[in-house]
Amino acid sequence: MDQALIDGTLAAADTWSNAGANFSLDSYWVTNNDVTAYNFGVGYEHIIAQCWISYSNFIISEADFIFNTYHDFSWGSAYDTFDTETVALHEFGHWLMLNDLYDPADSDKVMYGYIALDQIKRDLHQDDIDGIIYIYGT
Ligand SMILES: [Zn+2]
Image (tube, rainbow, N blue to C red; front, side, top):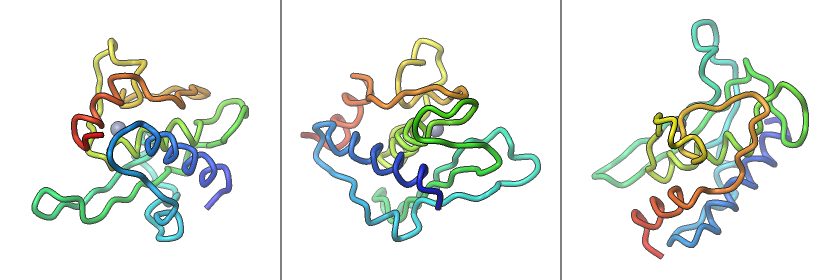
């Protein structure tokens, strides 16, 4: 996997792990292929990344997310790309059982369901933090 994807993903995991809730994400999933990247193909160009979660008795048994390499990603200041950390921060929110938000009033939150090229959103909104603490406690 591209180094920009790995670096951005690790930074996003740290952000969630430091949110004050009772869990932490570690780097295990990178080596375990839980974060991957490939081209989704024709008809799926609108998807930037996708999250797959399996549950067993309401407990997550498997979680993966995939960057769609149809798009260009970077971790830094490249122009006309999607920021890997911004995308990974959102996808980890799904791993942690948060859902997409689509109300324009939620556009500052990590769990807002839309992203623009070159958009940087690397910090959790207080509502993202409140949501995760509601689920996992402190
Ligand atoms: Zn989403």
